[in-house]
Image (cartoon, rainbow over all chains, first blue to last red; front, side, top):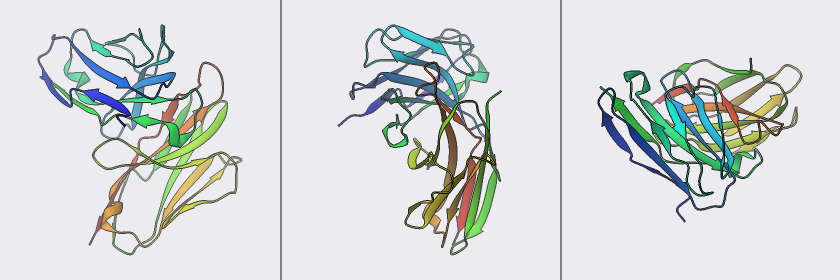
Length: 114
Length: 114
């Protein structure tokens, strides 16, 4: 019963490096999204997808790329990491309706950019 | 611009106290309001509210929505140290471009002292 799986859990990057945060879900959810959480800011939507091959920008998309080649996977790419991207990242998935108890979050990825 | 605002941002109480957390919103095509509890990891679902005036209750926690005044409250009675967490309010919207997206407030950090 995996749910939403995020990797890595912790990562330290140097400014300018690139990396990919992986997110996979095994619940056949159409909707997947990435949020970042900073102190005092709540969760802010980075990118989201309503199905394979479809992605769109959220509130804070700059510096991040996503793709959705399969229903299960939704990786988040940082092409050139900046200290401002130090944050906790959450992947979430749900069926294509907003019903609170069917929105599943991953365990989070703590990213530090030095 | 759609926004969700929570107050207070932080709160320190003693065990046994009752607390009220507030969430106000200005969101187009409002569909539902959700409360989450976050303890160092992923947010966990508490309540989803869609109708005004109907209280949702789970143990010592309860919540109600006022769609006329655009706010919700989360009450916690007889607080315990295990209630210490960040409480997040989020609003879901109708519309094909909004389906599945949540707009989060900043969160309220509650600390319950023994």
